[in-house]
Image (cartoon, rainbow, N blue to C red):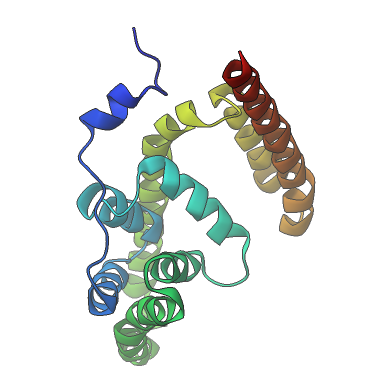
Length: 209
C-alpha cells in the first residue's frame, strides 16, 4: 500500500492553479475580504485551497504559520506573500489593495451605523452570537487542516503535541505570545531542522548506494 507521501496521492488530486494576473489577485482578494465576517481563516482556506486551488492544504498550513508570526494581520501577510510569489512587489501590492480597499469602505460605514446602536441590548447580544459562530468556524477549519499534518516532516504526533503545549501555554497559563513563539516555536523550528537534516542525509546515502 502506498504511503501518504507517494506521488500516487498527488496524481489523484486536481492540478494546482495560479492567479492569471495582478487584476485577478486584486479581485480575488477583494472578494475574499468581503466574505471574512467573523471567521476569516475558514474563508481563506476554502477560497485559496478548495476553490481556487492556488495551493495545497499542506502549503496553506506552512504559509499561514509564517503569516501568523509576522507583524500585522495574518490574512494580509498571507495575501502579500501569495501576490509576491507570482508577480513580485506589484503582485504583493495588488493583493494588499484587494484586501484593504473595499473592506475599509464597508467597515467605515458599519462603524458609523454601529455608533448609533452601540448601547442597544439587541445589538450587543447579536455581536455575542456572532462571536460564537466565529469560534465554531475557526474550530472547524482547524479540524479540517489536521490531515495536512500527516505529510509534515515531524509527524502528526509531534505536531499535535506542540499544538497542545501551545494551547496550554496561551489558554490556560496565559503566557505572553512572544515567549510562546520564542520558546515552543523556537523548539519546533530546531526540531524540524534536525528531522529534515536526517531526511537529507538518508537521501544522500541512498543516492550513493
